[in-house]
Each structure stands twice: as C-alpha cells, then as structure tokens.
Image (cartoon, rainbow, N blue to C red; front, side):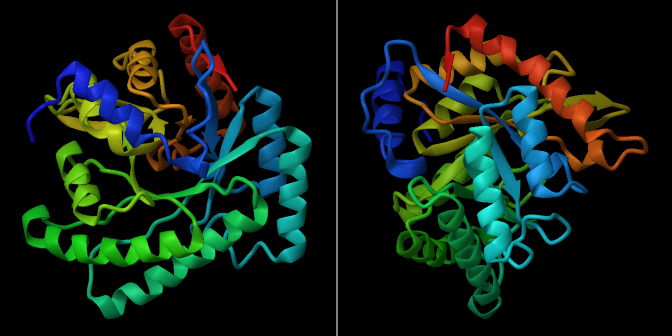
Length: 311
C-alpha cells in the first residue's frame, strides 16, 4: 500500500468516518472537535455491570465499553430482559454513552465452524440494540491466531459473512489488528476491510499493538483511520526482550496529544477508550477502581492539551 498524501489522508478519512458508529457522523462538526473518553469494562472482570458503570461515571468518563466474553457479567445470556432494563436505566442515570461491545469472535475457520461465531455476533448486536436502540454500540473483536498468508483469503470470505450479519442488524463490527495475531499489521486490517467493501465492517485502532515494531504512530493511524470506527488506548513496555502491556500513559512512550490531534485532523469523531490488558488485571492485588482512576488521570489532560472538547 502506498502511503497517502496529507491531502488524500484528510479527504479520505473524512469520508470514511462519515457513516460509522451510530451512523451519525453526517452531523455538522463543532468548531472545536469533540470526542469521548471511555473505559472498557474488560478491566473490571469481577464487578456487576451496574456497579461498574456507576464507578466509571463517578471517575469522570464520558463513555463505556461492555465486555461480552463468557467470564464477564454482561454476556447476552446473563443479561435477561430485566437486567437489560436495569443496565439501560443505569446508563441513563449516569449519562455514560455506550460506544462499544467487546467480543472475542475468531475470523478463521470453516464456514461450518463460523456458524457459532455468526450467532454470537447476532446476539451481541441484539443486546446493543436493546440497551441503546437509538444509537446502538459497535462490536469490536480481534481476529484470532495463525499465519496471515495462509489464512487471509479464508478470513476475507468469513468477513463477508460477518458483513451480512452487521448489515442485517444495523451494527458496525470493528476488527482490531492485534500484536502476534493473524491480523497484526495496519495494512492487513485495511486489506480485509477493502476486500469486503461494506460500511458495516470497520477497524479498531490500538497503537499499543504496533509499538516497538518500527511502526510509527502517524504511519499506522494514517493507514487505518479512513476505515476506523473505534480507538482504544493502552501502553507497552519492553522488558528482557519481551513486550508487556501496561496501563495507558504508564510507559510515557505514546504521545496521546499527537494521537488525538492526528485523529481529529483525519475526521475521527468517535471514542477514545482506555483498555486494561489481561496482563495487568491478572496480576495479584489488581484493583480495578484504582486502575480506572489511573487511566483517567493519564488520558484526560491530553484532551485539553490537544484542544479537543469531550462530549
């Protein structure tokens, strides 16, 4: 892929982000760009959803991501109609915007094995619409493991099936390139989205998966942003030749002011979501509330420094 010129980048990104999360990007943009600062409940694995939402709101976040994997509280199976009403009410009371649902849906495998994945996506989309019918959240997921060259065509075909589910349920699905995964480079994510060519299939940008790999923040964001509906943030550190994920802002190696400025310059008007890695929350003595406060303390000032209003 040839790198875009600045003019092409701004024009393409503006068009590409026009119809994404909630399909509400056609609204006139305020003179001062506006994004939301969110927290993923992936980092609160043992808390009941309603409790976690109130904690996130009290800290000061604007938005939230629910985690739908089996060990978390907010799976479609655990949230019956009564619980869905309670979660929706809590969202209303706290004022938090529900921007995303985190899933773990593997993009590799035979069409037969993909049937369970498609059903999982349908249930996630249904939950999103039940909780926020006027502005349903997107679904974000990684792609799985394996060798890119061996599996890219298989994933392209499977992603076409995902696109049908996304279109029929009016729910954006965002795939995240993940360090060490089968899709682990910005160009690979873009290739898949371009092959499927559906407005409902987008990307999730998380620069922590490209650090310490000779992939610059500007380069990776410039490549992915025209197709990006969601931005997640966390840091990495290099220790004994191995990369570990840490809380966003903890390493001091990612320039979040630059990230925000580049994102809004390219037309992005979505969520900046803090994610706590399992490498962090599986550590002995982990405190989810303290972690959420640290993420907020590290990220909130970057918005003001970048001149970006929080919605």
